Length: 111
Image 1 (cartoon, rainbow, N blue to C red):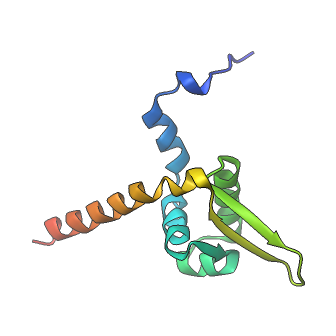
Image 2 (image 1 turned 60 degrees about the horizontal axis):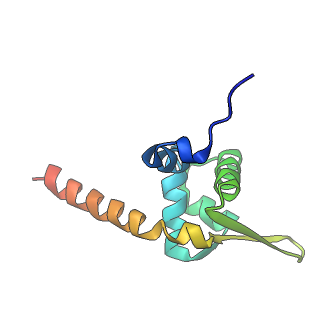
């Protein structure tokens, strides 16, 4: 039987990387950050080549990790929106910093 590991025993960097890892998660979070609230189909269009299954899986993981919230409106057809939770909003400076670094790096390598 595997031993449970308490969250307090995990390196904070490892925990952060675990939440943000994956090919699409940072792009998903950046689009939610920019839109504040975004519907599934709009998010899928903005991401381009992501499959419906992959987007659904990534959104579910982020929801389980309490980074984003899923709001379902009882209308026909169903309307579902995604936005940051309170703890998810604390990622915004991280996302902005990563974007700024990406721009700086792009400028660096293009010279």
